[in-house]
Image 1: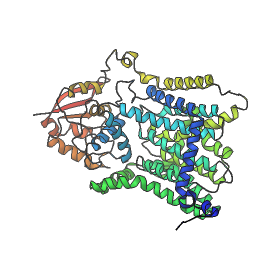
Image 2 (image 1 turned 180 degrees about the horizontal axis):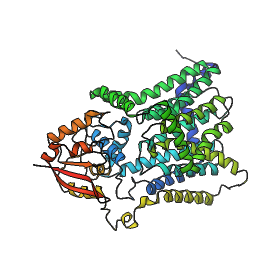
Image 3 (image 1 turned 180 degrees about the vertical axis):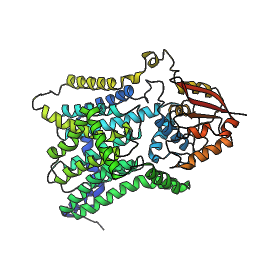
Length: 534
């Protein structure tokens, strides 16, 4: 029997009608492919630029001898331990979200005693940010101006990137992607149907951030609410349901593997107690008056110390939505997104300057607004030498911002060993031992010894995150037990440790361990290296 279809039937028998989400994915793929094809040379330049910027402006780079920043060494060694079979939150401890350790664990696969793998991963993250900034710029500007936007956005961010590789830095990539998709949708006043494929991406990006640093997921709340409200008011009920399904699918794509990992290892309750319950306690927000005081004081500080950067951010967060976003719900969604992101970053008592990296995404829209005004008076031809000129200027600005982290050229060119500081003094002692074991009683530069000496953590609390005893007593109690049972060969105690007084007066420490070396800062011993008595 021969089966035939009428032309009308054939027209209806399309991917779009049967699998609408996949059809949208395909359309998105075609759009991205065309953009890359049309702007191939620009993307190649941005790719090289991002790698060079990270090469000069991050201590992850092979240009520098070592990155001794405590946070990233903590991430790296927990990630390394996880990829060697230890279970997060039960065998190895920190209170950050699991995905930051996965990122660093992947980096450790390239090298377990250096950050060369993390240099490539960090560079790819910056490539993603510059590419997306360019795509946002192209929504409103000619290519050359969009290119300038992509060049200078990461340069502005460098002022708060610290030594490179923070959790906030990776989070910014996912937030920038979300910002691009929101602006694409809300640009037109009559925006109605929303592509489910874009919502799928939102679900994935949002959930990745959720499992790195919980509070920064607030970026998505108001823009997503604006999207769903707009679809609902346009009475596109079928599209609304498809978008809800797509968002939930994105959430599940990220969540299910994580839940399965913890279930298989019997650690799901530990994960909840650590990442949710403990962090809620640790946040220490204070009362409403204190929160408002923090927000107002830090707003003034941003204007005083981050003046031109903060003004660009405010232009991008407040002026840009009003002037360039056509949809009223989109205007409100993006402004409230900035307000909520600013609030969760600056309201805690324990604010650190690199926490603010994610809200630098609004530098993109700020630069776009400024360039849109300037291009009326300054015409820049799209010639190759202008592209080269602005690339070199942006790279030079980035290098000047970091100034090689104050490293002398003899150290950078490996003509001289970098042997000053507590890290190198204690490392040179510990590294002489065969298969040493170590526990750091604080979170400081000495945590890098685990990386450089390739020491695998052997106890759960091998490093002490900044958690006071009254908030999390289990850590100090367990570390005391490790000392009593002589679980580790070396112990490093810092005067800055939350439990410094406790350990200095702990008899069992001095009975079972010998004070091997000290390090003095400003004429005072502030670091102590103990070795187990055998």
